[in-house]
Image (cartoon, rainbow, N blue to C red):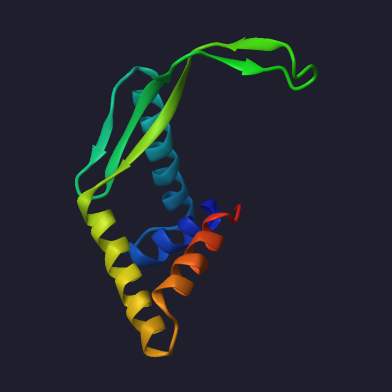
Length: 124
């Protein structure tokens, strides 16, 4: 789902709200999260998850133009998301239902785990 699709869903599910108002709500949410993270604060939505920023330590890497030459990669602040209990439980329930459905039509759990691993490698 992209931003436009999310705006459409919000506009459809919230009574008396236009797509423009839904877009403004989403923009306020995103901008607020960004503002809080840049100020080293966290945003927690109970049951859904927590947005936070962490410092990724500096490390030694390899220069791609000259693989024999090491380069120093500096420390950098990166965004993180920790899923909340409700979100984790919803994903576990869906995964459990899919596993049960696959087992009922003759898929083994080994084949199912291979299929799940293959879908993890897709890019969006």
